[in-house]
Length: 169
Picture 1 (cartoon, one colour):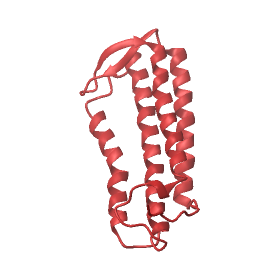
Picture 2 (cartoon, one colour; picture 1 turned 90 degrees about the vertical axis):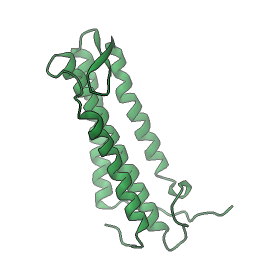
Picture 3 (tube, helix red, strand yellow; picture 1 turned 60 degrees about the vertical axis):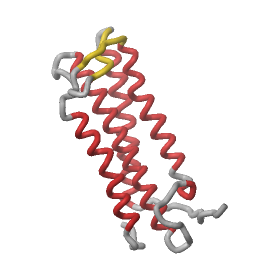
């Protein structure tokens, strides 16, 4: 079995910014959840159909699932970012390209973390707004926007990994 180079990843300014914003969103998401738990009635929408309309209702405690899942994903992806040498790459990793390849994939996971946190925060907010009657669900645009937001980091990463450049900003 071949081993891939192990390097110490350094945070560039963009990476630091994404990490800070992600941590802020994580705190905001939990704050919003606690606020909604206090303000919501006993029964809330717990499922939305493909059109974004509430189609199932349940106990307000189920809203706690919404911040727990992305928190677990955030912690898991953050831990995984420490070991970029274990990922699968489209090219053979060697000493010459490892820094570039690892940095791009680590950055993608940082952006995925941010997008996941934003999506779940958005769901919590829209669940609250639906419950109090401000909106009538997530909206038909929720699913397409979510798919686009999740696809952007992946598409950018694949295009960057296929390039033969070695400078990263």
